[in-house]
Image (cartoon, rainbow, N blue to C red):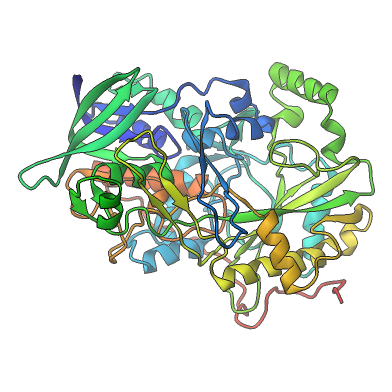
Length: 564
């Protein structure tokens, strides 16, 4: 057993861990160890944006977790991949860049995460980012994270979808990450110079040139080491690499950035968590903290698929010859269809009157295909990924044994809450109305999925239970706050344990309205200042447009063509 000493030990080189590694090593006095279970991200399938479905479904690059049978999804086991590679889930995700709505962060603040109000976090979103179209009160132009709009909606279906949203009476927005965060518009992605701009590319690579950063890959952390007179001080970690067990000591802090599955699991392996869960797994209780692994949340979505009447969809590009041409062009020039995730337009809407900010999200794709990249049917088509983004259902992550190689028990309890089931009924009906608008007349063919025969609440519910998939946004399992289920305080410190923090999407109190990579990076940027004892960035007064009549209407305008 070898032992090494550092100031900070970061567990997990993912969306948060890479950010922390970069920011903490800006101070040359800090010796930082970054541990990652996976290996290198230098693969064409990771770096080429269009290949996104491959790393997500590859054991080498992702933990292929599976849930317990989900009781409200006809007992289906759901796929829950998490990054296991430099860059973590930012190296396997869909690269969609959505910060979440301003009110999501106001909600965090009201839930006990004091100081995480939108005014406080907007400067950190800006700090992280270089927006391809220039900085302003909302967008950054000097940050490590490159963000663009893919191929700027060259396919006509993207703009037709945005216009259909407008025809249906919804807002249009020039930037859903700016002042107008509700409505239909172009979608943004973490792509720079045609490459996936993961946190490994954006933050870790520049930092690896510093002598005060040590990165160890293929390192499986077993537990956090607890010492001190009362056994409540984190002093380091035990990890395994190449069949050998090592201990590394941290003079200042241990920081868990292993994600919403990994971080609660590591706390539990270390004897920190709910007593019953630990005892059942045969783990000595070192510190009772009942919220560890609880409050688990995720987004669900399904594909709304239509045939396309015009020969413009990407289904024509899915044969091996076209894929080869796309790949060669990307290798040579880093542009074309290989340089985008193809989600280039989107929408954020409210499901009903009385909902203050958007709770439904659209990703539009000018093709009809599955997550594995295969076409859904012969011929041209398009699809919308639609889901309810503010679920009330809550699940858990529970350690099963003291063996760190045994995966934890995961159950989200998807659609347990009636409000979530109602949200998906709204998804079906509102989408049909949008796609029926004049802007889509030229393109809209037959509805393939759900299918015209799915109409009643019961039929929609049955379809949803079978069709929904995870949007791969697990979060909130080590929530930040001060209540009985809170795991970390608003400074990201684990309650009751000295020198131990959690910094990743597990500490979100509630799941935001959107994809999680961007808010995870923001959390790490702000946490880095907290860890370093630096003065937080000045709060922003940039306003956000809200529908002033949200209590009485679901959208601001009238649909040109209302469904019967």
